[in-house]
Image (cartoon, rainbow, N blue to C red):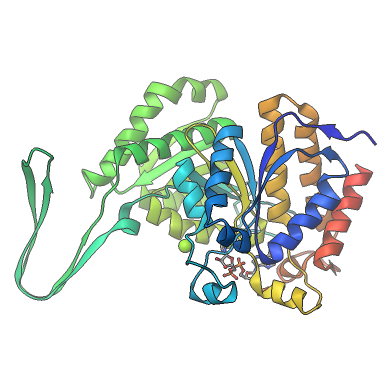
Length: 401
Ligand code: NAP
Ligand code: MG
């Protein structure tokens, strides 16, 4: 069989534990037989990050900036237990954090819809994509536990020494205080990433804050989005027949519950943290979720939204059978291959990515699935497959297409 040729390599970021096992199976069974795969390989497995003093993570992010498209396997973020387990020189930082900081991106997460896995919200017919700003606000705060009566002030000292001063509160007794910030640069790149993604996927964009209450902080987010929209995107949106829509966060939440889906919901950092878990669990499962980091420069990194599935990996190491869902990792590969096809003008590669996704979904719809889905499906008479058998079933579906 003639395999599909590629022009530019994908940046391949290998990872850890059960997802590393799935990674190899997906490549062997679902990609290599059909595509003359070109990748620049970076091993982000924890052992190799440790050997390279985490330089490999930095190198992989730089390669992504160079080539434009990466596909990433889930990786361990070390904690004290992992330092011992892997005998680490240091508690290395989260690779996702390092990569996000270097690519300056926004993370977009969308559920993968399939017949038989119904959203809890009955009127959601199409996916809702959540775009989370990943910098600042309460995640980079300073806090004081106020011991007793006194005056709290907000003070900004400019480089020339001049000051801006606001009274926060005259405390009559004990209390709490918090200082948060964001930057124009970060909000601007968040806005551009959201508008670019809306244009790319031809979907409406919703954005919401609490600007009626937060007249400077949240209002700045609203103003930056509006200004960028008017100056850079309004024409493109109108040509595509899509809409940018701003509202208050409480109004947005109410509308989302009544909506049919099929739009992007941009959220400030905290709103995105809370709302993405609500939206994803209402749609079914973290293993049925795509995740892509999009930078304002137009660089893309595709990954699964879940972790390395440690519990399954330990079973696998003991020689026990696992039934780990590979759908999100398959979709990370299809997303990256499709984007590479678009950028390099290889329609066959885009068509292959479509077929791979279709084969995966039709396998589930025919009643063959991993245990996590079997537990929540509305389909009758399903067959629970192990990790390898599910991927083999997708291969069979792909071959008959
Ligand atoms: P996890 O890997 O997402 O797994 C938590 C549980 O969710 C699993 O034990 C399993 O439940 C279920 N699950 C998740 N993905 C599944 C899949 N594909 N198929 C079937 N079931 C799935 O989270 P974790 O165990 O808390 O974290 C493990 C490691 O992943 C940590 O070291 C963490 O640092 C890392 N992590 C990495 C990323 C990333 O790289 N993007 C994200 C999150 C966490 P059952 O055990 O009940 O079957
Ligand atoms: Mg969270």
